[in-house]
Image (cartoon, rainbow, N blue to C red; front, top):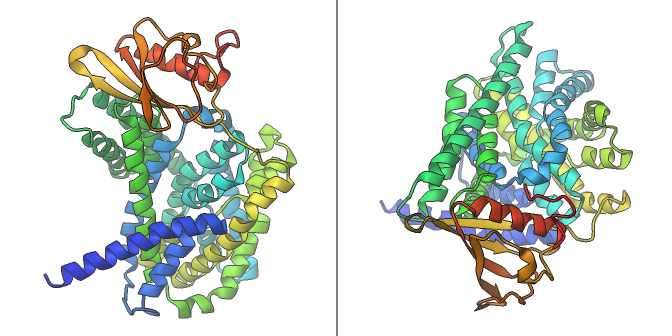
Length: 492
């Protein structure tokens, strides 16, 4: 019992330092995962002497954190933003993974003298990009929505095929003609389960009158975790089921959606911080120095050979401009996922697995510094950086069951075409009205002559019957302005 205050105090201190580290990482221009790993190393055997060397427990906790990270990624992914990139994103997360495994395995078999199975295992571990690492850098890169959507889909989906490949190669079982069928079954079943849990969860949450607002975010996250559990028990891809369930839920008309997304984002940050600090604790600085050369060799192969080839070959059907292909090739950051995947063969006792884990640590650190520091300048050199990007309008809803009505909370983002629109030009359905506008911290009841501005927050009261039409109209004007109907924008 006397140790509990110490443990809680150390945990809280690590969390506070990690939160501050986010600000530092943004200024330095690289993902905060390096700072979290550093905190873990300082706490570990080379620093304060906390010894943690259980690969099985590390793998289990890492996968649990990855489930929460994928849940947050799915919930916060906007379907209108990724829909145009659906084809390239799917090919990068499937076909490109296979190409990357083959190219990396062949190169490391020749360069490092690894046997073929172990070389392909290295390729499988390194085939997955990391959503947390990619988007912490992309936020400041300012690239177009199509590229962001492609990378977002890739990083959310490619964990699943990479995980399957690692498990198969680490098992030591013979690989035969049935392997492609097994992969297709696991991915398709995971996709179906994720969609089913997401759709059923959205239907249930819309109809449930829960007694407290804070229960909606908990229930939403629980649905995504249940999708993962069901996928794994069905011998399918639980990781893909998790992401798809989150994607469906995040793009559904959930009650208290804004609160849910904020909760999921906080939970995702907590999972990332805990995961990277844990991995830092597991790392041994002495072994990392010994793995420096293999890590640098593997990093060079992935960055200069496997990633570019996988991007170019998998995206041949889309004929993307060479500038976009170059950026996509350089933007494939590795983060926590390869380290977690490397724990699987280590916990299975695969010969040479410890060397793989240490080399992946080295690779992640080096590539994160290199790519993170150069991604934004590369976007500018290639002419892909945009001066300003308009954000999708945020609409949050809260049901008023007894009145048969709903409250919609709307935030007008920078770049929105709602800026400058008079309230009379908004033309909401007959059952909806803007009852309150909050501007600069001050609220007022708007008139028909009131003109909307960026950063305004609107409170819209609508009947349940007109709720969908109201949100579609708000989104349409947000995208195309007061003449949205004439321009063919429906808001879907």
